[in-house]
Length: 197
Image (cartoon, rainbow, N blue to C red):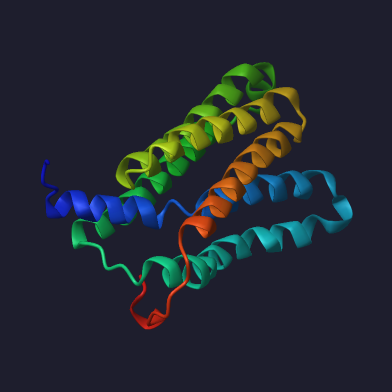
């Protein structure tokens, strides 16, 4: 029987910690709220406020659902550093996209080349998720990134927010299924939440 090194054990723990579907569910809800903010004029600001709450609610759900079942896992500094890399890459991609659009600066050009603008948006969104997938070692985020990129690109190209709803529903349902499977597989235990990270 092959032996598993410490790195392999940590990777298994990392993948189990992120196999609860909560991140997928949060991403799906983000898209659905983006759709609602686009079509529900009366409740637009409420949808945007809820968008800001998705991150804190995800962190809270991790503490209340995942940690009691898997324990308060402490990962290596190298693996924790990957989160910082993700933030830097995403911020860089957003900055590059903003510079490109501002450099073009001509609304006439943007309106005359909707396919190019849509492709740029789709590529930037996908690359952001690809960075998340690579540095967080979560292969399924490539698929989520493809759905996100396609949704935003098609929304721009077709001038309708319904691709956001379609992709958000798929991602959220996938997360819900993964969460249900996680809850069946792991029973909660008493843990000290103060060490959870």
